[in-house]
Length: 230
Image (tube, rainbow, N blue to C red):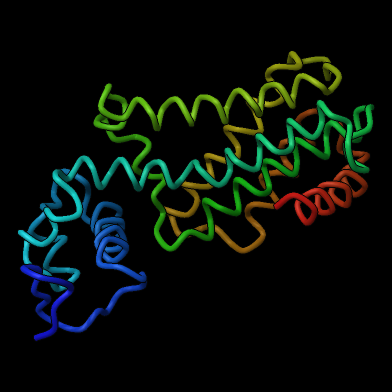
């Protein structure tokens, strides 16, 4: 038997990715929450999946909700940080994509959708399915919901920079892109996602904004933006 520290025996050698026992706990919980369901997963089963005692898990997390809070925050953190950079860059007018006009605005929206969708599709576990948990809507997870709402708001602001397309307001442009990206969670849950799915969702948002004719050019500018700021 090896140990992770005084009073925290480990039953077996680490078998999960992660530099620390805390990382391994999060990975095990992510797997169990997304495959067995949050309500059906106990802290004991998480500890067993890691190979530690239940008491050792409580050294890192006081409650199962604490684990869920960290996992939910992680699903939004990367996309939100990128969207903040893109929006700040657009206000400052720096870089090739920071100039005005619908092409530059569309490239910014496409880049945020592409980056965000890639994060959701390439994470080790499909944690986006946890968004629909009743628990995720309670005050306990206010911080996560605030971050998610901020991300949605940034989509809306970026979409508002595009011209109205005749059937949707400019604010709806961004909301459409946001919803298309979040639909990737269900696509992945059904086993229908492919490596091209994030690109397809981002493209669909641009097409629905009425800019299909300029999609190739918008894609190119979006890719440059992701490379520069991602």
